[in-house]
Image 1 (spheres, rainbow, N blue to C red):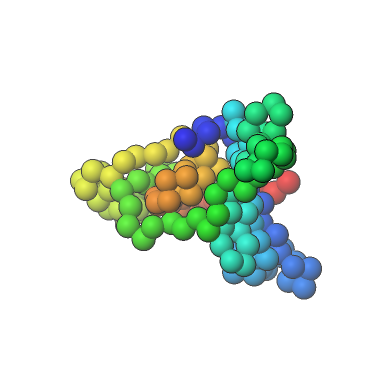
Image 2: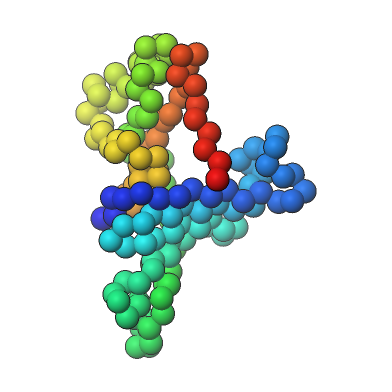
Amino acid sequence: DNNWAVGTMIGIWPKSTGLIGATGRDQVTSLVAIYGPRTTVLVALDDGTYEFSYGCTPEGCQLPDGTWEPWICSRHDIKIEPDCKIFSPANLRATQDVPGYKKLIDHYMAERYTLRYSGGLVPDVYQQFTKTQGIFSNPTSPSIPAKLRLA
């Protein structure tokens, strides 16, 4: 149900703020795409988060009226539940330098949360929308800095 694959995350900022010095709150929208057996894209809009699916079959996706389209809105108004039992802890090396992160991971394990970490940022984040629950963490530490990838 999560399409286990690779993907892309895109943030879109207005020209007025640009990217340098901007924050996530300045974003106009964002997209998370997964490319696998199915190609799906999450799009954040003003009124919620939507999932679009491409090519449900080689002919496309059949609509209720019998017509076919390459893209359909497969889910709408997706919400992440406030309570969850799934966690995706990235950068576990940081537990050596950040005591609070080690304590958090120990808590998840002691409380028997379901571990979901594939090593891929996009699939791990996408699962939170698929399951409508989850926690993704990726802290930095002095010896393990963040990796920012711009394309």
